[in-house]
Image 1 (cartoon, one colour):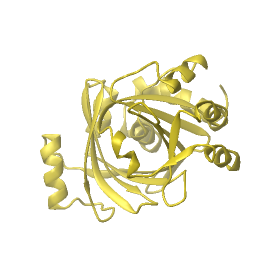
Image 2 (tube, helix red, strand yellow):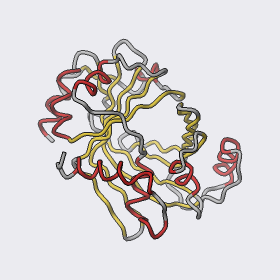
Image 3 (cartoon, rainbow, N blue to C red):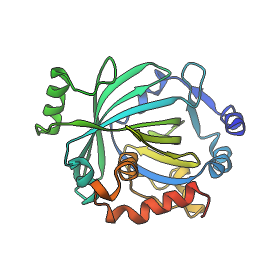
Image 4 (cartoon, rainbow, N blue to C red):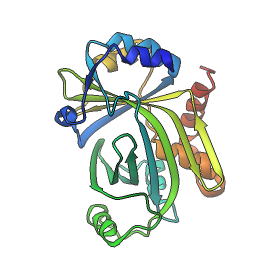
Length: 252
């Protein structure tokens, strides 16, 4: 961890306010997965191209999320079935900032649109204001219940010139009730762009290291790990999940 922090100190910092220019609430996302050792190898190669987000003195802030779905796991099933119009709903806490938002992520024809409202705290039962917000943007009156807690640390890099942001998630953990799953060596990188640009430095870095994009959300990973085949069908995701586990266990 100290080696990672030392490398991050070589990046110029950027504040939350300065990062407003790349909110990218409507965007394309491209995901990659590799080990934390690879991250330590990759970061020095892009130091001069990106700034790093710093919040209250930390460049590896913590995030906590509570995800919601209905009792039939409709959001998960939409993703598994390859539906091009699908949603995720969560309350996310940005720990160092002490900010919480109820967030909707809408994936539609390859683009991600995020809507959110401030909330005071995590809640297991959504109130009237929150339900009205969800009904407006989900176009559906689903009875949503909590299904999973997720926590991780994140490095956020902001391109110095392009309208592009790169998030690097690590120390990823999922839990609900008595079940816990950890991915402590896995890095999930997500390149967020206004429009897909395969010529960007990070995309080319992945290509040169033969790391191909993959599609599987943390919500789906955690749902499979916590609920398994007793509750969920996930045939289409088995190879992807095995790939991530091999990375985490350093078998690739």
